[in-house]
Image 1: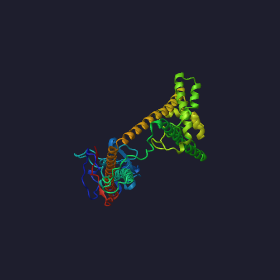
Image 2: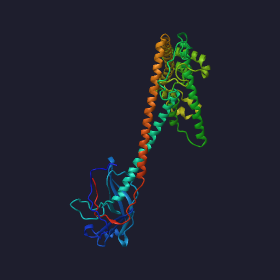
Image 3: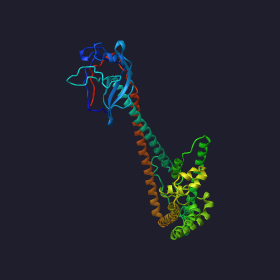
Image 4: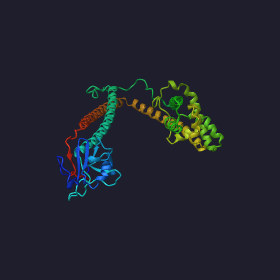
Length: 464
């Protein structure tokens, strides 16, 4: 651990208990184990105050950017007839000292500190002293805490690295590339003839397929939203059954992100919401455009949604949903607040969420219908590109076979290379983690403090 360099320390080692004399101002401060004893003689000018009042043992040290801090470590009752304060040092400090730890005694009810030696040329301070063995154990605890943090961070990093390695290893095994030399052994395949792949759609069917793909995404989004809302409703019911209250604002935030983070309300936008917009007397040109979009969607929805459950889309994944901008989610929740309150049986949603304005309603309808129209346009383009590429490949069979083989070999080598890199990274993290765990274990072995009493009046100490 790096210690602060700007520390002035003046220390004179004392190995045996010395008598109280003028050099120690009639005091004797001794340490042994985790005990600090402060004794003074009857001629001490503060004898009356010290004998009837208690005292406090204070630590002074520097903490990072906070500067010098003071921390009360222990209190002692009045010295009484034996003129002695006894303090028990804690094992650790509240802060994390970056340098030396100075100790001093402060009489109860006083802002002054107890002087324990005469001022010297090397240092003018007469009150602060140092117990180096205890200080080392404190620093060791600080180092132990830091080591524990490093171990925890490395454990998280190694777990993530192991997960990435496992995923990549699975990809290698799935490709059949586990054996040595598997990449070079991949045979060249003749791609001529054979059935047209499922996701290759001829030009006459591309428009219909695009519509079916986009309807399926809306349908898939509604299925996902229904599942989430059903789960939220059960959780709300469970909280209420247990006598708990519902944090409506937190629930609204969950709905914005978890439910309205995607576009599943196209049927509403093309139906009841559009009718509401029409009744509100919106701009005729805008209404005409939205009505045309809505009619197109309703026709597609009525035709394809009943069989979406058994449909495997030619584009994307089976659980793909229709997206929209994140800025639409709050407005969508406002527009659909009453429906959410009904489905979750939380009436407060309708009053907690900001009321939907005409602009919100128009914006949500536009975003929803434009999202569907954009999906159609994009899907048509993708289907055409895939079909055109397939046709080009079909007309260049020899070149395609070579290109396909080269692609598979490159893909195999890349997958294996990535696996090897991830494995090396994981092994390096494991080695680093083992070293940090070993260092942490070593720091857990704290040497015992010396039990032989030692006077430390003249072990002067200064922070900064």
